Structures are given as structure tokens and as C-alpha cells.
Image (cartoon, rainbow, N blue to C red; front, side):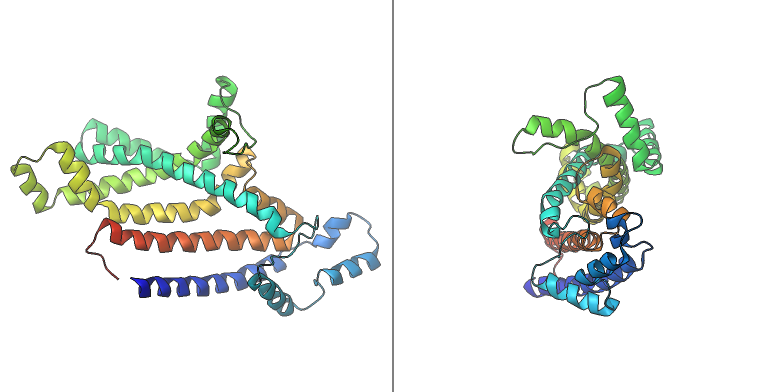
Length: 313
């Protein structure tokens, strides 16, 4: 197990190195000049030249990349071109906010998906199964931003019970935090719950068709114990894989939800930085998303052995 984890960590580091090359190249090839945006219209050409030299933007792109990589290796993500603040100062509070949104979205989706998937599999081909499957298919087909706008209309405009934007620290006032996080998290959870429900249903149907399940039924094992303890546990590996992929993709996919609800997370910062061509901030945001995705995938692989002891690396 220890050797496997080291191999996965090594693979993750190589993956992040390759991603850094791709991201650095793409970001610097985007049209637009951050220095021009900084000084607005009709700036002093000499001042632009001095500023570009100060930030190293007049050097070849390879030299810029090697310099940036060396700073990152020392824990220095640079400074924002637009406001001069250290990138790390801008990122740290927003990473926690985006992770909280992702975790609550996944939590809500699992609370909805696991019972729905188990019931749908148990009531296979019944009206309940067809209803759950139909609702899941509809939710998968609807874009997240549209679902978010719909929730805003219902809960913020018509019922006027939940706010549509802002942020409140979780440890200062948990109730206020939940009011603010609820709509974005439910928006994230709606699509993810639909996907997880369908996967849970498919995995459960496959397990319920196995011979040992038939034997347990003949031995008189109760329905709840049969479905929840025996069948669901053996169906967990494909479900864990899907949830791990969802969590990794959500860390980058919450950008749209953060934009809709003006949630001050990492995604909203990245959108603003892309508009301003703030290269250091954009690169740091994308690398954080990539690193979190790699970490989540390693955790998912390790989780396999906890769910099924027969799985060994």
C-alpha cells in the first residue's frame, strides 16, 4: 500500500508539472495586455515599458516559465499584476470557501442520491423507479446556471426566505452561513445527485442479481439488511469512483455557480483575473484546482481498500 501511494504521488507530481506548462503557455497566449488594462486608455508608452520589465513580461516565455516555476517551488506564487497583492493572500481564504461549497454540494447530493438509487433498484420497473429515473434524466440535462436561477426565483424572489449572494464565515455564525451556502450547494447537488442516483441504481441492480443475494433471500435475511448492508456495500466501488470524479470536477466546476450567486470563492476570483489578464492569479487558481483534483483521485483509490478488503495494490 505504501509503495502504491508513493507511485500515485509521483504520478500526481508529473501530472501537475505537465499541467503547469500547458496552463502557463495558454494564459500567456490569451489576447490582451494586463499592463494596458492596468493603465487604461492612452497610457505613457515609457511607463508601460518600465512596468512590463518590472513584472518580467518583456522576457521570452520560456524564461518567464522557469522563473515562475522556481518561485512556486519556494512557495512564492508571485504578486497580482492588477493590485500588487501577494497571490497567496488572495487565494488562501477563497480556497476554503470553494472547498466548503464543494463539500456541502457533495453531501447534499449523497443524502438525496443514495436512498433514491437504492429504492429505485429495489422497486425496479415500478412507477417509483420510472419516476426517479425520469427526474434524474431531466436534472442531468439542465445546465447548472439555469437550475441556480430557478432556485433564486423560487426561494429568494417568490418565497423570500434565502439570500442570493454574499458570504458569512462558518465559524462566526453557522446559521447565517447555511442560509447563504444553501442555494449554491443545492444547485451543485441537483446535477450531481441525478448522476449518482443513476449510478447507484445500476450498481445495485447488478449486485442484486448475484447468486449470493438470492441465497440470502432464501435464508430469510431482512430486506433492509439485504439492500443496505450487503448489496449496497458491494455496489460502492463504482459509486465511490463517480463521487471522486464529481468532487474533483466540482472544484473547478463551481466557477459557474459562484458566478451566478456572486459567491466569493476561487472560481469567482479566477473569472475576474481572466478578464483582467492577471497572469499570476490565473495560473495559481488553475494549479490549485489541478492539485486538488489529483489529491481527490489519490484519496479515492485508497478508499477502495477500506470498502472492499479484497482490493489490494
